[in-house]
Image (tube, rainbow, N blue to C red):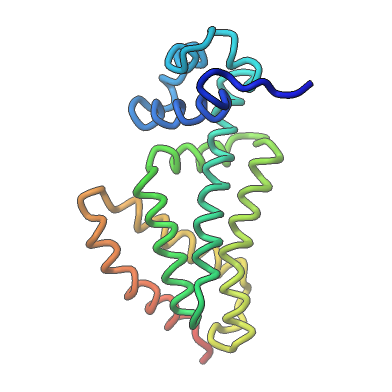
Length: 194
């Protein structure tokens, strides 16, 4: 049976957008399918066509967040030029996403660490790690990154970027962006072959 669009377009997308707004305004505990339905102007039962329950909604919201972050970082690693430029673009992609969507990023990592996360969510996290790994393994092939375990390097890079964003607030966005080239240079200096 074909999906029938609602009067305002795709209800699933509208519910996810509404959930992300509510998440940013009120946090995950305040999210409810009934309230999202009210905000979308549909019956309280309509969200049940797309989400089994609130946990399914939160998992889906986290999944779409990882997919969006991976798309942004995937574009960044395709930046032409030397490894440093690609890593800097990757860093800016992550930091920009984190500062634009702090509540979503927090939810993404919280849902990732729940017992038995959905396979789709685990796979999305894996794809994001592969995206971070790509410039690392390219740098190792070029000889600009030492032959350490690439997974450990990718986790170190990710943890550094995540830590930087957790220390920042919206007012320090430009200051943080100004520091990113030095952070990337420091990482590359530590990763260069001896």
